[in-house]
Image (cartoon, rainbow, N blue to C red):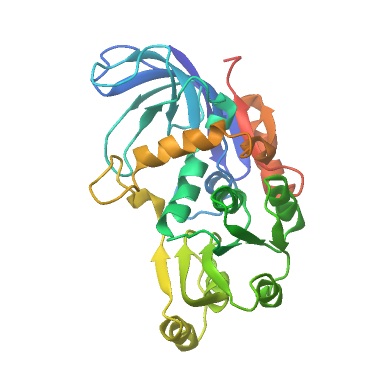
Length: 336
């Protein structure tokens, strides 16, 4: 069976290519899947499309957020032919993928029939966001500050808002604040140093919970400084950039205020439920389905375009250089 796929062949160079996918001898845990939609993961894919991520060579096949219909399946898989599924596969019209019940393994999950498939292409983003929410010990009446309003940050803020908490979104970029407002976030701060406004919104108490979604060390320090005594700081963003600072005042702040600081790397979440914890991929996925069904959690406001994959070069360019006009982009594979 012929498959069309997106390929990064160099810095700022992408194209559609073709290959043959064998339909024969599927393993028990394998499926052949016809893609309907796949979403660009702007952070990961742009870092590769423009050579920002070091240590790999071209060509590269990007993508890991796909929704499609099952064409053939192995006998060990608990879904049927023609079922709609979510699969962490690269952008392609047809893929042959396996399912392994382990952390960071290849995964395929059935999507309920009442879930919009375009919205479902954002499942991976939602699973990252829900990890940050699950790690916190949130209570009714708490104030939560979300530092960094990229797509993950907006989703984190919207999840906390749905829980009934007072949510404050912090980001210096206007179009991100505008998107957060469309997702229903009422309190937004655009200052680089938000302390004065946070104090006003929390009656000088500070935040009960701070969530960093940037991975930037200076922003993490800002989270720590603006969290009240006995509060919580969740590090959902992955720190990658070097930063020089006298760390002693930061550690002293954590120590003197009795702060709880938690790492939120989502790839350590177990796939199946385990005793003593509700934080598993399967449990989180069911919660994500409920969110996607909700009228007051409309992720479509974050999706700026649904395009033909042949426009991949323009899509990467726009996501890199027209960030104020373009947000999430979804590929439509119906013509392939």
